[in-house]
Length: 256
Image 1: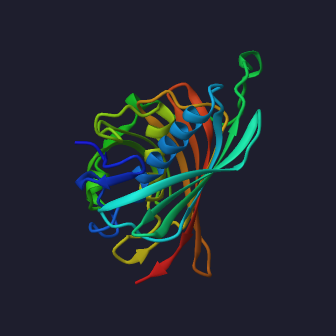
Image 2: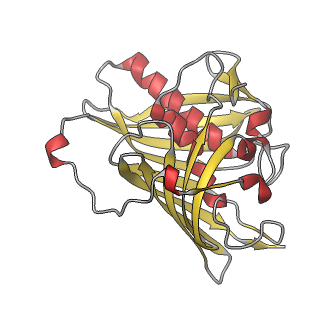
């Protein structure tokens, strides 16, 4: 079974694999973030044939989304020949719940310039298998395979993959599949017990300098809580070839 089923040109329905970690009646937002990328890529391909690549994904999470039907609409905010800004909105019963603004850039061959000083992490085979359902409930968390090297609470590197497709009978790109896992970062090395402290993220921003290759997605993650109710989960993203970008999530920290 997939995370979502398409019910119309712009409408979808979540399956049990999307049920969330904070409340199983509501979606874990991670798969929806991947579906929004899939919608942006589909809109791009219908409008133009030059294959602009997504360099930045900036999501604002405006509210919770039930495990139910919903709609996604895509609009071009800033059209351009080599660069454009696209906005995708996920809404439930007319209420916007997630907003994605994505910068699309012209692809060029810069293989001879490729370089990053971001440190690599150990490959998946060298990390220990870890069961995230020991910390979190919900269908999405149960669908993820995780291998983790925990340094201390709030600091870890880990790899994540899933065999659950984003959509039933519809192929999604490696980037859309990876984006559907990005939001898991905020739960894989908790700084405080989720039963004692809630720390949901209100946004997620990914900057990419290489497209993921699919399969395992790696994170080098640090979680920080401040003294005034704010938090931050910061990650360097990896595929099996090395670092591919960075990820940040702003948290609202709520002691029980």
